Image 1: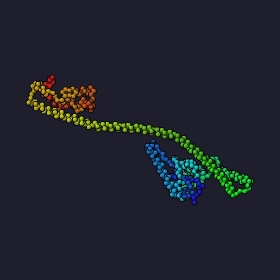
Image 2 (image 1 turned 90 degrees about the vertical axis):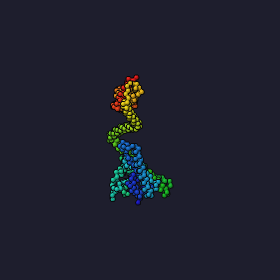
Image 3 (image 1 turned 45 degrees about the horizontal axis):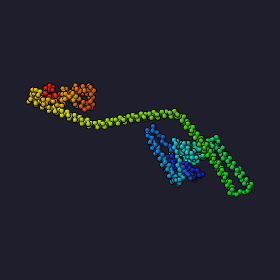
Image 4 (image 1 turned 180 degrees about the vertical axis):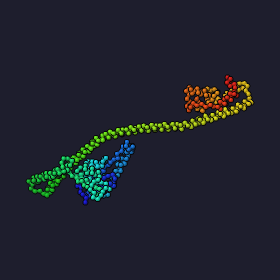
Length: 432
């Protein structure tokens, strides 16, 4: 048979996992005359920070938001269970808050909402056994010890009632005992009787008769007065217990703060060191990224310059090949002419007394005696090129590009051609 609740709303503590609290909720719906039901939930938010988790703050916020969304979906499933059990949807509301400790969070909700009727789990349903009477849930033990005395608590496991903590109006948190509180309530009863008798005596002296309706009105007034005094005592007791609870909480927080003061300082120092390390790491990463960008720019520039340089080298190669071919042709030509002609005077060479252009040093503009090939691929008079370098020349006289090295290689083919040509033109240096 369902237990009457005198119109007080019923609060059922539920967990995020519907499977854990489903039978507890169903027991409350089937064994108590519920007019108004509140689903009570304490959400334990995941404690994360960017330093310890290695995640960005936006990623942590997204995870916590996902947890809240999942919790809200579970609470809606509990409401659907209530509707399936015949409770009107508008008679089911949800109370919840955030706390690090579920037991403390439930006690806070009890004080804040003046909860008088609470149903919660005594243990996990898997721990239920026949004839079970003890509470194994630490949350349930904490709530039973710290909840105000006027709150009645039903402790359920696997759909079975394990214990009941009856609500009472004693002043356990003050210097008065429960017996003294009950005595004060009985005193109210004794104080009300003379008040009623005095009223009836005055009325008898005037009318000497009371109708049954007037008697009922007097009794009803006394009952209302008594209930009002009971509520006043209940509120005062609730305030005292809340003050006691708040005081204990402050003392505990102060004790923890004192005990872990040094630890907090060390933690702050560690956080500071890690922050400095992260900043140094970020600077190193930025430097690496800068070096990568420079390398990429160089590679792109090299990709642009390579075809141009290759084209220039191919052109120089072709010119060198052409030069050698002309040298060979002139050598062959000179030999043929020397067999049929024998110059006897400078006038005979007046028409062809100019040497080929490739016999001329680009620096001195004179015919070369000791031609050498430099790093730029061009041929110079050895002494002239060395003089060029000694006077600070770091670039090619022909291309104006920086020389890769200062090495010189004898151009034996060109030297042979020049000597051959000079033999054919013995009066070259005597010409004006």
